[in-house]
Length: 133
Image 1: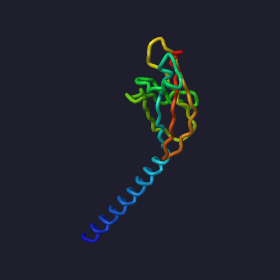
Image 2 (image 1 turned 90 degrees about the vertical axis):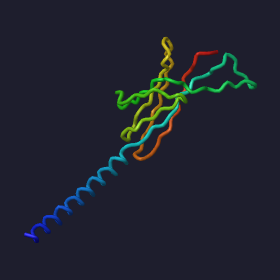
Image 3 (image 1 turned 30 degrees about the vertical axis):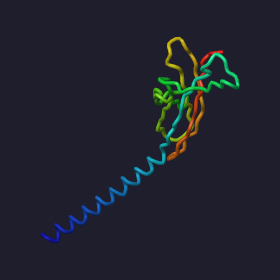
Image 4 (image 1 turned 180 degrees about the horizontal axis):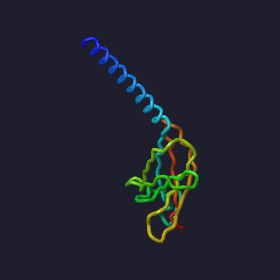
C-alpha cells in the first residue's frame, strides 16, 4: 500500500507540474498576443488669436469619447482623463482609434489607423479642431 501511495503521489505531482507548465506557456502566448494603445486627445486652437508672441498650444481634452474599431466595428471605448489620456489593451492587429468631443452640439472628430504588436505599446495623439478662429 505504501508503494502504491508513493506512486500515486509522484504521478499527481508530475501531472500538477505539467499542467503548471502548460498554464504558464498559455499565459505567455496570451501576453504576447495583446498590445497596448496609449494616447491623448488634444483640442486647439484654444485662443482666438494665434501669433508668435502667443502660440496658444493645443490643450488636453477632458471627457472625450474614444472608440477602438476593428474592421469598422467598435470593440472598446473609453473616456479621456483629466490629462486627455486614454489606453486600450487589444489583441494585435490593424485597428482605428476614433475620438469625438463630449460637448453637446459640437461634432469635432479625429481618427487614426494604428498597428498593434503583441507585447508593445503603440502611441497615438488625436487632434480635434476647436473651431476657434
